[in-house]
Every structure is written in structure tokens, then in C-alpha cells.
Length: 237
Ligand SMILES: Nc1ncnc2c1ncn2[C@@H]1O[C@H](COP(=O)(O)OP(=O)(O)OP(=O)(O)O)[C@@H](O)[C@H]1O
Image (cartoon, rainbow, N blue to C red; front, side, top):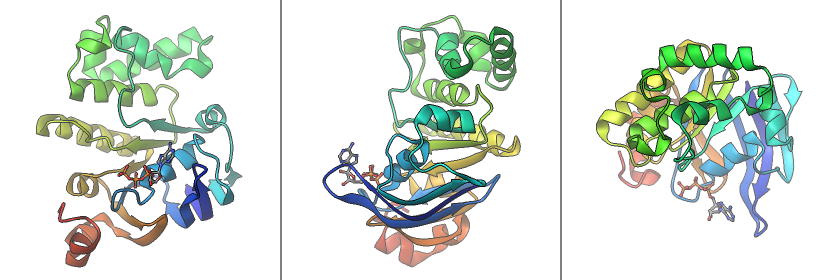
């Protein structure tokens, strides 16, 4: 689905990604873990076009997508859910969801159909659609962010720290939503500080350190590897 080869990227003060090689299989849920500053979020930003790579190749299926504008990547089927503050609190829940369809905003019938489908999967839209998004709990807001990402039926969703700031019950909602995405054929790439949670909902795991991929394996194998816990995950396991 996504294949990154020898990618260098950064923010001006030097490269954060140092020749990164990464493959994400179609239909998989893959979670990237690693110490603070390893470049995990930078990988997502490079795929979704928020950051252009300085060199290297990024392929999405057969297509070379390195350096494309985020809007072109959304059209190609890649959507990123940002780490936090993703909703406009004064706008209604429904308005926030529909922002995810901005690129097809003139296709009213299509968007209404998508909204109806998403309201079936995410009851919060049907129940609280007319309320300001600012009224929702953290877990409910995260659910609305996911619904918004799915409006244009993406092939791939990038989730940056979906567990951030959530209580245990909301974490369950996030896990259910990720499972539902996978079941509907969406490829999911997650970055998580909460290693246990992230690898727990993923099939595949990727360990990063200093802008490179150190290890890829099944999420279970990484979770069970005592060396990984001691060396890279700061005892977070
Ligand atoms: N917008 C930015 N401008 C300048 N430097 C940045 C920016 N975003 C991240 N960095 C730097 O890039 C490096 C990697 O950041 P990144 O967010 O990708 O790491 P991470 O592995 O996701 O870590 P964390 O879990 O702490 O977010 C860090 O040293 C960080 O300070």
C-alpha cells in the first residue's frame, strides 16, 4: 500500500528521517512505536503531504506520491487525523464531520449519503449532530474526528496518537473504531506513545529510533520482546 524507501525529511534544522524504509501492507493495521523524538509523527506528516521529503521515494500502490500537496493526497485516498484539537468547538458535530468532505462540497447528495452511512456506524452523529462539538467528551470528540476522516471513503487513514488524553472507556471506543475501519478494508497506520494500546490494536508493529526503522514484525512479537521494552519503550510496557 505504502512503501517508503531511503526517505530523508526534516524541518530546516537537519533531517529527522534518516533514510527511512517502511512498508505498510494493504488492509493492515500497523503501529509505529519508539522513543520520543524518533520521528514517528514526522513519518505520518511526510506521507500525508504536510511535510515534503528532501529525498527518497514514497509510493502509494503504483503511484509516486512524494511531495504531493495534502489535498491531492486526500483525493488519492490518504487522510491524516491530527494529534489533537482537530474539531471546531463552536461548529456542530455534523458540520465538523462534513468538513471531511470539503473537496467534494458541491456534491450535496453524495455527502448526505455519506453522512447517513457514518451516522449508522457512529451513533454520536445521529444523537448529538446538532450540538456544538465543544460539548462532547474527549472520547466522543475523537470519534467525530474519525468519522470526519472517513467521509470521502479513504483507502488509508493515518492516526497520530489516537489514545492521547483519553480515559480507559474511550480507549475502547477508539479500538472498536480502528477494528471497524480494518473490517471495511481501510489500511490504518498509527503512531502511539501508549505502546501497549497501540500494538494491542495493530497486527503489525514498527519500531523506530533516530529517524530509521529498527525492527518490523507482528505487533504481538514486538509487544512480547523483553529487549524492546527495556531498550526503546522506556518501561512503558
Ligand atoms: N514542526 C516542527 N518544527 C521543527 N522541529 C520539529 C517539528 N516537529 C517535530 N520536530 C522535531 O523533529 C523531531 C522528531 O519529531 P516527531 O514528532 O516526529 O517525533 P516522535 O517520534 O513523533 O516523538 P513524540 O512521540 O515525542 O512526538 C523532534 O526532535 C522534534 O523536536
